[in-house]
Length: 594
Image 1 (tube, one colour):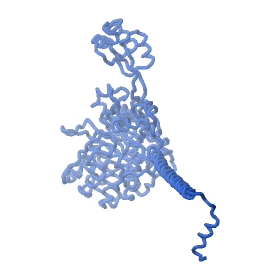
Image 2 (tube, rainbow, N blue to C red):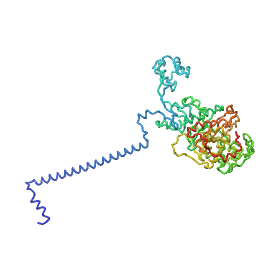
Image 3 (spheres, one colour):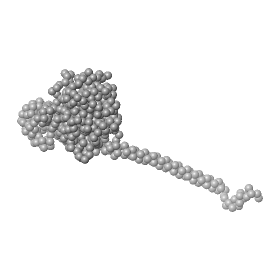
Image 4 (cartoon, rainbow, N blue to C red):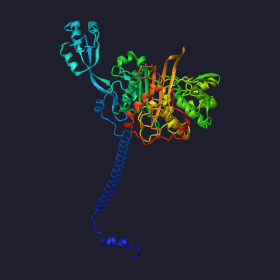
């Protein structure tokens, strides 16, 4: 037997004997079982494959959902609200100051509505128009009874009064007149009253912001109703500024005035006031007197502000090398022709003056000579870099367009601009320029929005730090022995400059009308804040010792504001420290000035 045939022989010997046909059937059954096993295995494999695919799909869906949740959590920072929560939000977001003190809020209130159809076809009023008007007048004494009766008799549906108190609504209900309804509405409320009115503006009857930040932020306040808008304003500083400004206007019998407190390093406005003001809680009065009440003396009114521009001229001359020796003396006197133009000083301060003396005495004659030597191109370039040729930068819609000399300047224009005439700007232009004068020479735009600590701030360099350091000395000298002495608050190291200018219009200059300004910074050894006050048409009064110049009205306002706001802003009075003026003080012979 060979090896190839051996397995068959063994199989034959060991296999059981089968009857006729049994072998075929047995083999067929085995084959079917094998096929069934194969089918089951294949089905199991297919089932496992399907399960794997289902698991993969669910895994993808789960990962996508998790990614979306994470994205929403990061993007919305948990700010998403459900529809019920959203419905409970006020119609308009709050406005708060930098310390989260509310400046504008939305709150539910009642209104008095007359619905003549409330009683069907019968008479609109049970008691009649006259009796009902008399009853309403007893509840609201400030309403005109005759006007109420006329309106009730007209039969027209209308508001009789907006914003009534719940107790007033109860008294109206007690009259038993179905035609008198008091629907509940959402009103804008300003808890600080008229404080900061020119900053905030107001909301009209249709719920739209008018003027101020209510207008600027209107879309944001109506869209993101759950998040308050945070302004840079500090209500404590705002209150102090408005209080002292009102006192200064009263003491000098001025027609109005304005003031600003500005952070020199960020441009944030801590306070901005304009008087006379208005109460945004009474929008109908504001709308009726808008043109008169909306005048913003700081951002929208332009003036020839006079001598407050003189430190800017001196800084530009130092920067350009036109002034290298502060001891150099210039011809002075009572009047002198400079650049073909007769220039006057308030008094004769001597035959000659140096630059520190010229600033201390506020000499137009010397500054006109400095401006002429500096040249119109360099002076104009500096003023343009400070933004004096365009509207001031701030969020408010009311921003005045300066009157800036166009083209090539004549010698007359150059000399007059050098001492603060011949161009008209807003006090905000001056405030931002003074910030650059004292902070190391860098200009920042003003802003009414609170900035996050360390947030980038727009800036451009105007002067070198050395020039800024010299100007700080000279400004401190002015308040120590010059025209700014009445602003020299003890311990706060104030530096600044006065400015008094006749108000001009198309008819020329009015000698009986002046604008007075004092622009200052403190503390001068490390300047942090600009404080500026300006008064329109102050008069010579007994309180101002018969004077109407800035030294007697605007400077005292600043001198009272700084001690009130300094401690609130972390600047405490300290008589043991000051900026060193030892190298410039001896250059001033005496401290007499305007």
